[in-house]
Length: 238
Picture 1 (tube, helix red, strand yellow):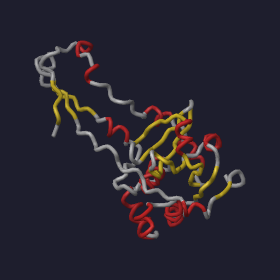
Picture 2 (cartoon, rainbow, N blue to C red):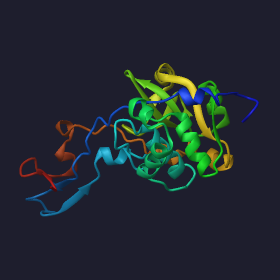
Picture 3 (tube, rainbow, N blue to C red):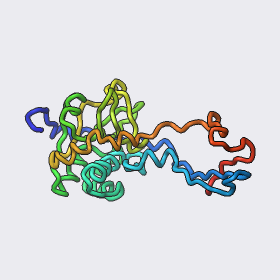
């Protein structure tokens, strides 16, 4: 990739994110109880919408840990190198400028140094979203999300949308125009194993996994399932 982009070996140290705090608590698991029917007493385990959003995205645990969660997502789900957010967090914090990390969060330099300790080459680049789409490599980017500096992983660009693994909000798709207003214009990528990275970019399975907003139960017609309107309950498993 060198020669096509402007490298930011020095600037990369200045790019940090205090991160967007996790804005949603995990939804409780639900069960449907269907009494007074031919399938009375049957319970159907339902996967929560929140859980679906984090099947291939590492969920950040702390307000300023979006960087460690984004890097853990990149390594685990793109390069098949399983790591936890906690292990990445501890390593970057231990080897980084701890006072600055507590104030500003992790920087791209913290990520670069972490990867270097594991003999994985990486760098920051300035380029357009069109160029990132052209080279087809998942990359960590810094966005301004409603005033919060926040690291996310771009996993694809297709049909006017950007596929994002967001450590706070989970897997989501966003219009290119919206993303362009938030993005700093710099992306951070691993510069080895490009064939592996390109297999993961715009992966159809990941696109299909983007969860749709849950349908309101008020619009859910029980008669469509052949079930009675009375005696139907939604039970919490806890």
